[in-house]
Image 1 (cartoon, rainbow, N blue to C red):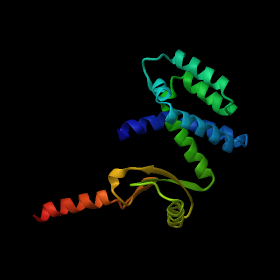
Image 2: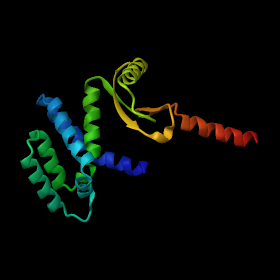
Image 3: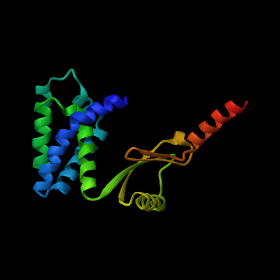
Image 4: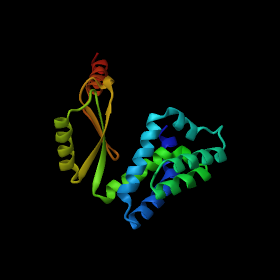
Length: 186
């Protein structure tokens, strides 16, 4: 699974990089990032749309035509529209989520920010989010943006991933470690 994701990122990165370079040169980073967030939200809200983009049974021409219709009906940023059309023509719409993620990472890095993926057993309140953001910012020396996820199977605690670093203080992991330790003792 990790190898597949790596391949998808390799395919998506040139599109993200080209879009980032053009958006930065035309002073449109914020506008492009907002437009990509809208596309990302559409992918998350519409399982049909997401499946459509990934389906190998649908021809590249059909996907390009559909994407062109969507772009024309929406008032998306012209730079984003051009990249979407290019990806559709090249049969690369299946890496759209990875392209958006790569672009956002580049934009955040250019602003001196870093993104942390935080998974908790229940949603964090504003005070917890603020305290966590401050603690992580002090640790990494940069402004931190949090992507929050909820996984009730953690029971309690947090899992925080910043870049390649993982901090796991979840009760699920601690209980698993205790279970392994007890097997070794017994």
